[in-house]
Amino acid sequence: MRRFFLILLLVPMLVACDKVYINGDLDGMWQLQRVERGENTHTPSDIYYSFQRHLTFVSKHYDEKIPYRFLGNLSYYGDTIVMSGFRKFLEEEIIATPDILSAFYLYADTTLFVIESLNDDFLIMNSRDGRYTLRRW
Image 1 (cartoon, rainbow, N blue to C red):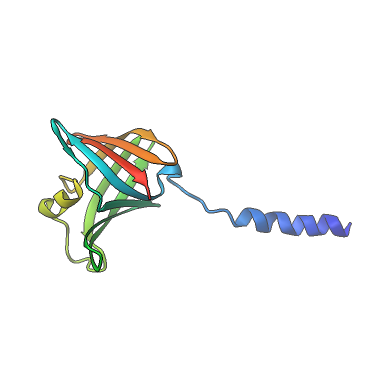
Image 2 (cartoon, rainbow, N blue to C red):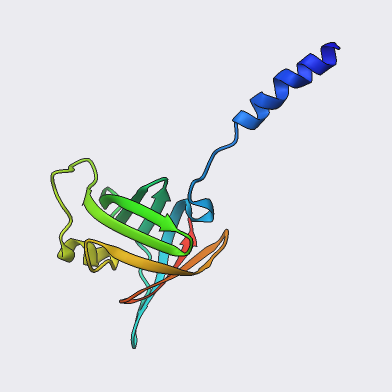
């Protein structure tokens, strides 16, 4: 009987420790590896996209000490990602302009992506502007 109560107490504690990812495999940090836009191919190595819950965090490291970071809204439905409303991280009064967003290969305040492939290691997504390949960081 004591074992039964001990097991009854331990099982909920073990189950409660699991993290809940509302975006499945999309959640986490990704490094932008390749952007294909028509005949042009770009291979940035200093741009990172991070997806958590309903937020998108994008950063570009021009210099190790001074990263360029913006926080935006994230909507994820099936195979569609919508990123919008970017503001400078820790300085929310600064709204990202199209010129600023172009540093992250985002070309409008609201960017729609359709996921071509998503697994534990790689994310390939398409927008009207091109094809993006990211690897999990």
